[in-house]
Length: 108
Image 1 (tube, one colour):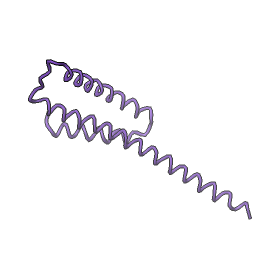
Image 2 (cartoon, helix red, strand yellow):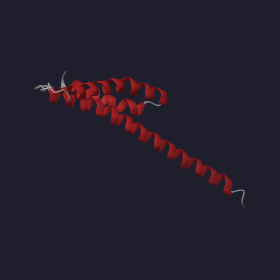
Image 3 (spheres, helix red, strand yellow):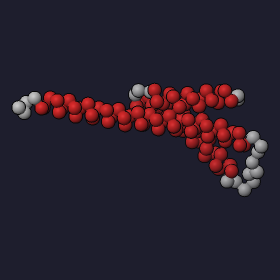
Image 4 (cartoon, helix red, strand yellow):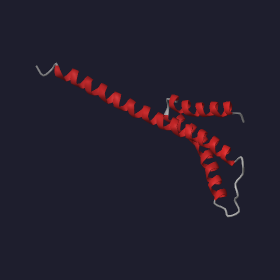
């Protein structure tokens, strides 16, 4: 796998969760990709905890690729959460302004 492919996958896993508008599709996307990644990490940690594990020369590169890919998905999910919180706060501010401007005219 070339570095360009890994970077393209990482970029898409960073951007797609942020662009998904419906929460159902966000969670489906995150679970479909996140659960296998959790499985890969669980197998890796299980294998490295075995007494006969000696590592391999290519091990670091594989770990680096998995950190980049799973980290991109996690960061994309976090950025989507931040986008959600900002959207809620903006709606609260708009609602408060609407209530203030609608109620101030009737008090005089």
